[in-house]
Length: 403
Image 1 (cartoon, rainbow, N blue to C red):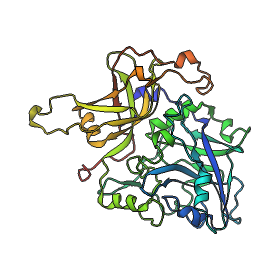
Image 2: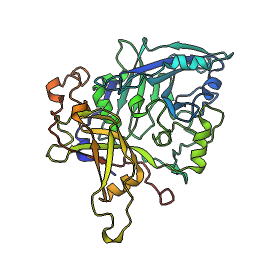
Image 3: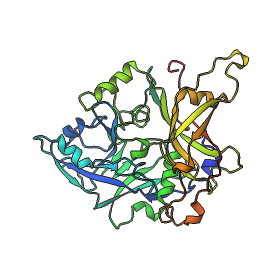
Image 4: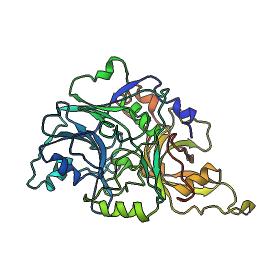
């Protein structure tokens, strides 16, 4: 479905660029670097170095890291393979508490555990480079994609063989293909401005966060809790970060079995948060930011037996993920989402202000100088909060075989 107008109004209409906070960078260099990464990443790493997006799983098939595989800015085709892996080190929201943001083992330490006698050298580059995102603006046209949909519900983007090698970009600049229109990630020396700053608006990290959420793209430790999140429920298949035809990597067994014999019953979707008893809109600055991982309840909005139509029993709960000023991501059961889009179910946030579930402000520097008073959340007055999901434009709808 098209992006809701109230959400589009929050986004930058002009081409924009913003620094992404809380990103770690790891240099992986050496003759055996492609083989080394192939044994750890869930997507294929070609012998010829190329950028990519991927994940690192544990032995139980759950996500530990979501990573962008850059080519080092100084890489040349005639040199030894030299990658820079970009990953989240903390929550994208600086107001998140330590309990909200799970501890992340530095990728360097994790990789060293698996480094044997290969010609691979690891070095942390976090103190040397920043990561900047750039995107075309909310009014830009995006090319529709083709999809391959499995009976299990796994969805893969179809990339033409001619563009497969260069699809994700070149040295220092990675095309963010997790969703159409998402833009690029560029590695920039600390203290330097990105090239895009010449003809793009300089946006805030909050603007990038809203841009990412509007495209339904999960990222980092809040949306993909380390050791908890499953790849397909987290849309990693849709974002091109896992290869179901690849073997011999950590976590491959469960991932492959889910693809061939399982069924995808949950997905991460973008959502709007609105007070049920108020006229506030999602663009209102008085909507608070809620702690991530709160439960989302589904309930019948009409009688379950009305007109003799069988409706799904609202079993289980959803989970709120990253959210800011009334817009966010949530892990929801697909049968509930489909019923909600038909008007048969309604979602409601399960929270308690007394238990500190409401975060009331963000630092003005992080929001681009908006000012604390303007982004401060309303004090809770016992209101109930409605959760409204939407299906991101360009993604394939579920088929009857998947239901």
